[in-house]
Length: 103
Image 1 (cartoon, rainbow, N blue to C red):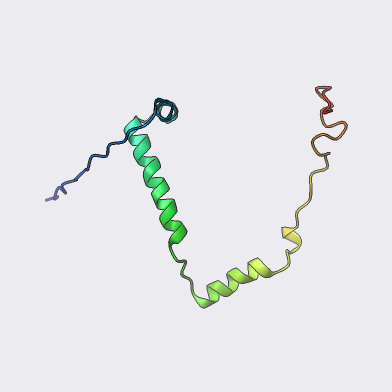
Image 2 (image 1 turned 90 degrees about the vertical axis):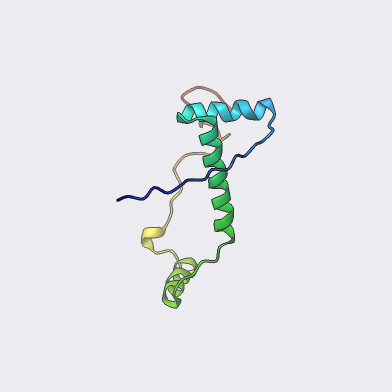
């Protein structure tokens, strides 16, 4: 027989300015979530990020050696990057289609 586990939820109260509430409500509506669900998910995600930033990363000596090889080695032929063949913003001809030029 399946055992039901009692789920304990604890209330959390916050005082926020109207502008913050408006932003939260707008974002929650775009995600199809309630304000409570949206704020809870955002708070938990932010807390997890902080915890991950402070957690040590553990790996084997061989894994660390392989990682360091990717960080210190020269890029291979497949890793080289090429710049796009277009001018920088503000150079003449960048806005050719619209006819606009930066002064």
